[in-house]
Image 1: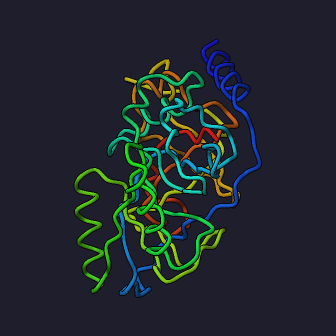
Image 2: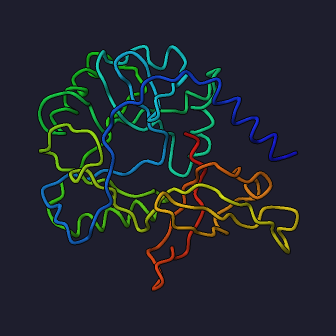
Length: 275
């Protein structure tokens, strides 16, 4: 009965969304420590909900309309901007709850739109962001914030910055080539840097718990896009074990490399990927 209720709630939420064409966005590749990024710029990778403003409306990465209060987007620019809808570190569930609500409420006062890209503009990354900066001077009082980009002069600067972010409960760092023109797709000029890897998988089976998890979910058996199966038993909060992700849903988990047999090392549940 519990699983049916969860599934019904998810279906209801999906039906309430207004679908548009999926936007053509840029995506991050994973940083390789052998790659030199001296001369690039770095910024904190914010763990929020991606919000793409196409000049008229705010939509998700999958093309679903985000129902914001009218005041939130009142002074938005007449051109595209891309960024994370965000509150603070470690607050993803709250952010997701606010953004997914069709009837926007006062909780949107917590949200800022942290911008990392101004698509379809000329010049390098900093030139494109400067266009938005000029706009915000003439059109203040918006939730838009431009994510600071820090120049990398030596390699150690990146590792020190990553350490600071992670130690303060941040997710990681993004490094980008500031001279690259705007492109879409998964780019070699835009990389995510983390102390761990993460990927997504489809839930195949829910295994029952034992001991203190009796009558609750114990672990999940999932399969990645490559066909590799993984059993995930850690990272869940109590409410996740009572109301586990449904079979067929997509979840994100982190891991710390691979074992000698090619299995995911220390897989840990992070969240359900709603979209």
